Length: 482
Image 1 (cartoon, one colour):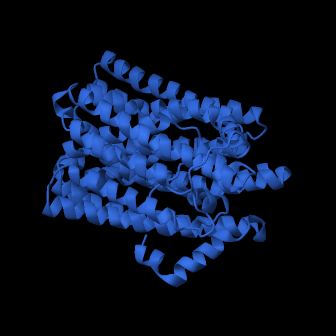
Image 2: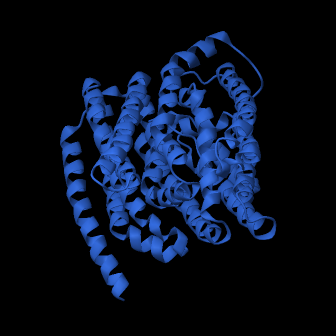
């Protein structure tokens, strides 16, 4: 799984002198100046602060927005996100991971990467504009895509213009700086989104406006993160060759990642209503809290820390990988089990009646993530050791597992006389469990397969998930009686 650069804090903290100066001084400090374990621990704490704050704000905003918008608005925005994410993945050559992993830290290398990113962002926006109208004609309920998609896709331009200082801060494990920016832009996004929906228009446009504001602020602030980094248009052939050499497998891998991660939503968008897609969007946001934190922690801390360790002390790499997996997988899987237990009741209590039926979808997504949390660190390992080919093969296995699970589940459920939609969604829950087979084989080939930990985590999580589902049925029965 590739390391994903992400979302957004109090902007007053960024523009106030003391905080900004301290952050920049920290970012400018050389990586070797502090212990890797301490920097990773501090980075983990700041990741938790950023993620916890963003999710708390996002949770409150979701409660508000589900009372201002209809589920079809969330469904159409899910389609917008799918198209934009697809365009980004189809053109990804891994410049940000390369900046984190590569030994070069000179302006020519960074400016070449930035120039490529700017050109890519503009091209992606133009492609989205060309796709918008044809896509809007495919179905009646897709007609808003004609105007929503070009507007939302302008975030690609802002993301392309974002400074390489973002990658430098991550490389140096200055997670505090990244966390503050993430949190601040997230606050701005939510405030603009809610204000627009309340005062201007109760439509999907509120979600688009929030997205654009957050991307713009993140882009501008990134150019003031680290004083000694000022990006300019440049192109060095050697830098381009190094970036392409690292990213060639990522290009194919992210192409496959899109289909692996979005094929379920694409099939649902084609086979089911935007309303059900909206329910899936709401359920995924609730069930994916733990896994999202794990992916953010892996991208911000795990991948840079493992890359740094691999460059300096390859002999200790495998033991530190196991420590990372134990420290993170156990608490997040515990949270997922709690989500399986309480998911149906939470959706009933938190959301309007029209969204309450998403509870069983929460359980399915959380069950699949139990296995996903076991395999995700292997993706960080592939990236940190430069084995991007294995990263590509891993996401190819996820795509195959997703197709087998969803399409197979759909037709199997219908053959047994059950609704095909239920079988389709159950297949999503089985996907990550099927994918483990491929990851185990590749991790073994890399000499990093930790089968004892995997066996304990998978078997234990499976048994506890069964008990949690049984417990949720008992709780739901008690809840109805009360």
